Length: 325
Image (cartoon, one colour):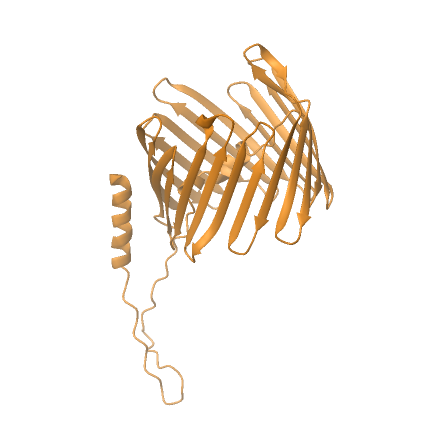
C-alpha cells in the first residue's frame, strides 16, 4: 500500500511541477502572431503510456506462454452472425491427460462460446464440456476509464469466481483496481522516462487470508525489452525479448522461488510468415514445445502442436482444423 501511495504522490508532484501554459501572444498588425525571436518553446513530454501492470511482461508472456498446445484432434468453427456477433464451436477428441494412475484418455468434449464486439463494449460467454460456465464483459466507462467483469461457475463451487476491474488510463501511467470474491488488489505502473517504467501491486487473497506486494521494472531500448519482478511471496522473475527482424521475435525468462530455491529458465521464439505462425519453447526442466498454424485460405486454417517432456518420458501431439472468420 505504501509503495502505491508513494508512486501516486510522485505522479501528483510531477503534475504540479509542470510549467504553466504560455500566455497567448499578441496579434500583429498584419493579422499574424507576433512571436519574439527568442521565445522559449514549451518542452513536450516524451514519457509514453506504459500499459497495465499485469501486462508489463506481455511480449515475453505471449511468446513463451502463448503456444497453442493441445492433444488429439480439435475442430473449431467460427460462425459470424451479423457484424458484431459470432458463435464459436469447439470439439476435441482423443485428448490425453495425467491422472493418479498415469496418462489416460479424456472423453470427447464440446464447448460453445458466443462473442459480441461493439464500439465501446465486448461481451463473451461460454459453456464448456466439463460443466463450467464463464462470462466476460469489457466496456468503456469514460474516455480514460475502462471496466471489466469476469465470472466463472462450475460443478465445483470452490472454483467459482466473480471479479470486477476498473482501469484508469493516464498520459504516462495506469491505475488498476480489482475486487472479487477470491482476490482484491490495486496496481500502479508509471513511465519514469522514455525507456523506463516502474510499478507496484498490492493484493489480498480472500480464501487464504494472505496479502502480497510485488514491484516491477521494464526497460525498453529500441527492439529490446528487459524486465524484472519481485514479489513478497518469494517469486523472482526476469525476462528479455528482442525483435530480431520483422518476422522473428526471440524471448527468454527466468523464474525462481527464493523460499525453496526452485528455478526454471525458458527460451522461445515466434516466427510470423504471411500465411503462417510458428512458436517454439525449451526450458531447463527438459520440456520442448512447438505449435504451427497455417492459414490455408481466408476461412480455413490448420494447427499442429507437439510437446515432449524428456524428464518425464512423456510426449503429446495435436492436430486441429479451424473454419470461419
